[in-house]
Image (cartoon, rainbow, N blue to C red):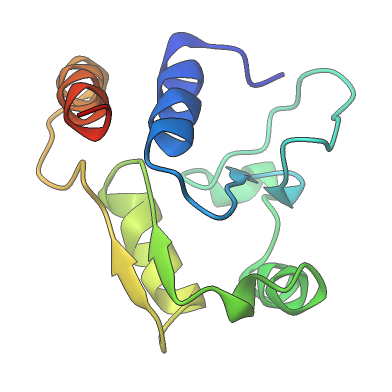
Length: 121
């Protein structure tokens, strides 16, 4: 499901940055680790509440169940909406977004390329 160029670039950055772990935030399934598989496409999205995305309550439950609350810092790769959501979910943690201030996917991809080049030094 998550095979697009932005996702691939984010995964490349996560691997180069040597994070202890990483996951994808899905509007339907919540937090997904790399070994978790989803079946097909879905229409839920966080920006459209009528699409019935996963609730913050269920995301809080996943944080405990998947032990994401044990992470010292949270790095998000996405837009402002996702950053604000993660700050709500991890209010007691340091939440970083190296893509903060980027305007659109093209700008984010360019910034990720630079971050990946820097991480490999």
